[in-house]
Length: 220
Ligand code: DX5
Ligand code: ZN
Image (cartoon, rainbow, N blue to C red; front, side):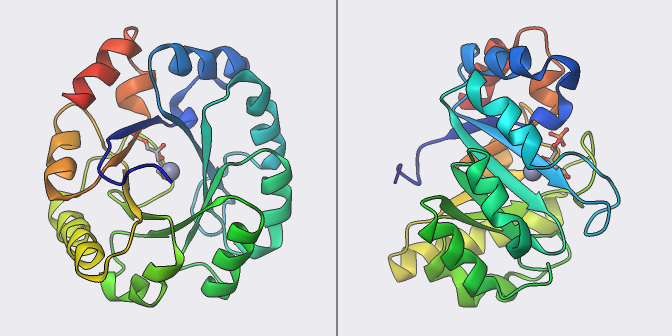
């Protein structure tokens, strides 16, 4: 497992040009991205519909970077096998979804993937407490999930990042702390200061002609 203090930049393909997704993934890879973030939305757990496992399979041959798959779906347990087969390296499920969270996390781990757990801005940190010793990554959503291009919700979410970081130190645990939504050259530093190390960004990276420069700025 990589060091939970190393900053990881993960461009979200949601903001890319899907008509040429292979080239878009290569563009992120060549610009210095660490992981590729894939947002799966079912139109039920969230308002929006994005893509499913076939899309993850389509992306897989275009990069050797870690595919960080974020499932915003109601029944994540039902589709795990398909997302594993599609070539996911890490799979993140929501604590608010309708499933046995411990069992789903265990299945992700048994499949050889990194186990991620996400919580929405309105969900208190206490909801994920029982699972923190069963994960490799905690995703603190910094917008209400569903759409790219929204504003970073600092007040609602940064206390949870700080709490997750303190809890990890106190209990000798090793999960990454990821933030997702409204991350740009400024907010990335706010999230980093509170203890998050994995930075997902769609608009602020895919929206730039100079993605390498934008990634570099997020590292500084
Ligand atoms: C939000 C998604 C995000 C989204 C981030 O529902 O989970 O990953 O792509 O997009 P930006 O960076 O544009 O806020
Ligand atoms: Zn996401």
